[in-house]
Image 1 (spheres, rainbow, N blue to C red):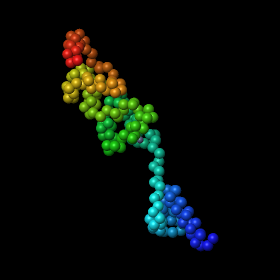
Image 2: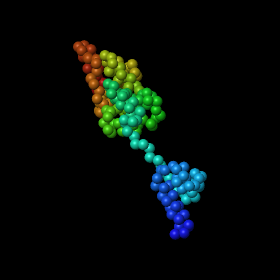
Image 3: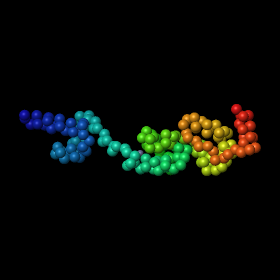
Length: 185
Ligand SMILES: [Zn+2]
């Protein structure tokens, strides 16, 4: 094998290194005893696309976003925190959050409805609903829902576990409430 053959062999090996490994050009330059620029020129001349360096695999244990989400999810009624609030609390851009959320949901580490609420108004209404003994209608009026009751029903139907209200309708209050409800239906 003459010098030509040897060069060809080296070239083939370099092409292989470039195409199949993510070894940095600088390191390859050292290995082949040429300049970094020569490697760049070679890549360009041969039209080689180098494979992308693989990102380290995402795990919720090492991911700060996931860890924060898990911490929030442990709080009571966490599936009534809306997506925007989670995003704001974590200081994230619009699309950044969803992949972490779906990963955690798929692994069943957070409730299936965690991060699925998209209305700030509903979030506020539910916060009042959980914290104060107020009729559903009053809460609705406070936050600007025409019919908070139907919002609750809709959420229940789509899988949210909405606990019964703190407020109990007794006696005349209950009767007039039922009458109003019957009228509406
Ligand atoms: Zn994550």
